[in-house]
Image (cartoon, rainbow, N blue to C red):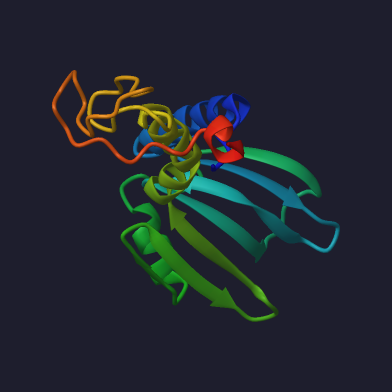
Length: 170
């Protein structure tokens, strides 16, 4: 008998899903970036925009430390042009560009992140809808002591009931 997933997983999945969907919708109007600049001038961070989430690793002349940028990408140009200008490719929310020295950017669509975030929630909801063993698979009626082979509630064929422990000992 498979274990039922914990409700904490479902709750965390629901919260994460709501956050990702909110970011996904917001990313079509506003782009955001959270960046960390090292002493060497190398930038590492994340950017959301045009329905995608990007990981950036590039070089720039900014002060070292954490930075939060609002609208770092021109909304009229978008991420597709951002990647194209740097010799990379971008399509359906996926993107990639490579620079010398191991620097570059990778982009994944937020619809994919939302699907992955919502998967545990769908698993929990699906597990709750299945009737437990010994119940009718169509309507959920308890078939304990039913010998007819049919559900008296809906008429569906009943699965063979597991042999009771008392009958095995006899």
